[in-house]
Image 1 (tube, rainbow, N blue to C red):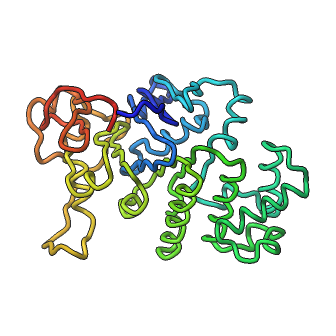
Image 2 (image 1 turned 90 degrees about the vertical axis):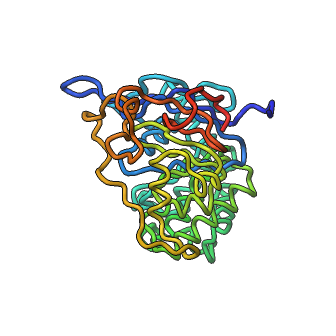
Image 3 (image 1 turned 180 degrees about the horizontal axis):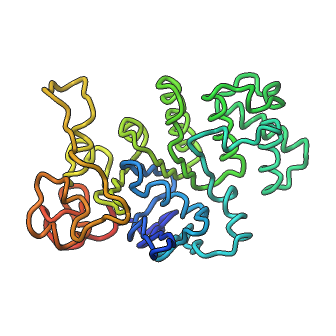
Length: 330
């Protein structure tokens, strides 16, 4: 086992929201580690807790939400619970963010160059001309043609795919060690999605950045991630290498997700359908949250909640496998 400390470590993270009727926990005891240069995909249905996990890492959980338990460590420094100003310095300089809709990440009143330059000067002593040169370089790195001219254009003068490239340049401006990419391709055409994914993969490899890639698209995960965490009802139900998750899933929910993906190499009479829907936060039952939809559920699943245990090459939270907790090293 490697003795190198992980770049990012999330230990038993829980996120809760205060309501009139009490506290609702939206993310339960999520744990994972991420090494420098590694891409971890987090996948699951809408409402599974993927984006909240990412927001907690960045420090963007706003009231009435709060981190209700656990710890987040970046380079062996605990960052959850830091004062707002300390977290603001970490955000951008050490952790970059790429969001789903580039229009919400860019200020329509300022040129893209000014926005990138402001990020650079906030973290480095480049001076105005140095920041502009660096901004032009970044725009070129992310594939913006003629960056010397485009740097003075406004967000509305770019296409959706080009705006997302600008957002990536903005996220890279302070040379962070970690990028949180939350559904970075959802609003884009399929051909543009492939370009953005290839860009993220290349930049991550060249810069040695770790990337947390949050998506509901397993095709994106298959092309980009080294490991995958599958979330359901606020919990990780399976985590492991991407090839094992895709080709040999150990949790029934993961198997259902994989079976619902069309294949061009295999003949199938029909795609797998997972009956029912994910429960609301107020309706999560005792035992395994997936048991009402699971074709393999038995009595124990109704009353006892399974923990992640080693099964083949992954760890899965399922009573179908050995009930001996495994180390947090998948």
